[in-house]
Image (cartoon, rainbow, N blue to C red; front, side):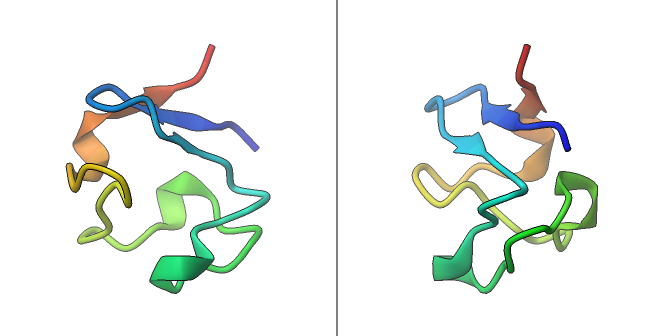
Length: 53
């Protein structure tokens, strides 16, 4: 699965880890995150993330 990086703060969403502090289980693809999910570090939405190269 692809990792996604926040263009604002550099946080990397790794689907293998998920975001357990915010209720996202490991193995959750970025595309499957809730529409209202936001970056746990800076609070921007999914639209401000891009695929990590």
